[in-house]
Length: 430
Image 1 (cartoon, rainbow, N blue to C red):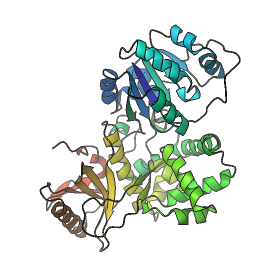
Image 2 (image 1 turned 90 degrees about the horizontal axis):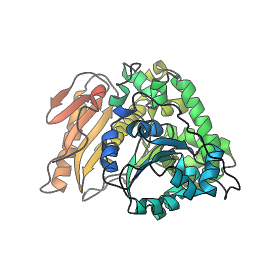
Image 3 (image 1 turned 120 degrees about the horizontal axis):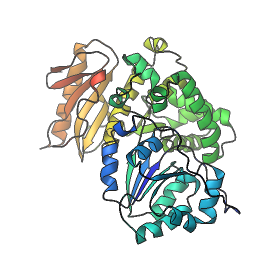
Image 4 (image 1 turned 90 degrees about the vertical axis):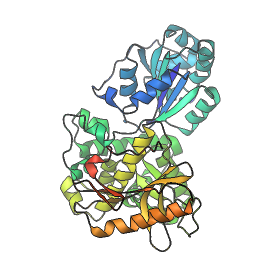
């Protein structure tokens, strides 16, 4: 059985290596909190059934730490060092014989050729839990997985921490603004690295390494500008023409660059909901950065106090809510099935959670700490119209996620404090 964890740095060998050196076991850094990641249960369950489990996700989301703690009895081999890559590329059968009893193979994106040989090995001995792989998402690697491991894999994604996971650290934010500004990457909390320094290093590494290897971008300054412009448009409807023009590139280039950001799990496009609605809707997707710490860094927000009066505080909070719901569903092993909705006459919802073909939850994000009476009626009206448009379907649950601390239920609408966002179900079972 193979468990494949993917997400992060992107680097492929250009051809066969002429020599190989047997690699030594590299223990690396292991966190004490990985066993508490919400995805753990799903991964273990998949590992009991599938010969291969594939987990994708961004760099530094904690994939290696998680799988090493879940499968701690395995030997460990990283393909980051060149001698390890040489060994896998020049004599893959010998490597698999040496680790026939099972191993954690880390950073497997460096040796995509190994997947073909691993396919034959797994087919011959398909017992569960034998191999654990981690690696990075990449267009070519995805194709290699589809070709070599088709029908043998369950696909999961590991994102940075959800808010309830952040709360499991001893050193954790205690207020909303610090939570938004700190983001959710494990190293910020587990290793005590100041968020501003960590995100500066993350962006520099991402642009200098990953982007160069993905698209061979020659003008890194233009791409850096484009990345910051995407941050400035987080929580807004996407206009690639304007984004490209502002960055000084064509719409086609902007489209390609945005695909890189999506492949790297830095942004998502939230589609507009339109199924079975009779009213004319604006069908433009919204753009969201998936981590608000990175978002704040790109916006030039250097402290939680700066965020307090920043004009994009509301957009940052909206992206945080979307990201939390996205992660909650993905870490439960589900498709996100998330949308936004805006009618031509003004009714809108920042977030719509679908169940099959029907809307199940409509939600708005309000960064204010005081509940305003005019928040609720538009959302309740929209929920009623959606129910009428889907005859026989239950009325979607209206929810307001806001920056205050009191939970209320008003006119069938739930008003949920920000710190309880992971205490309410975002997975609809009925």
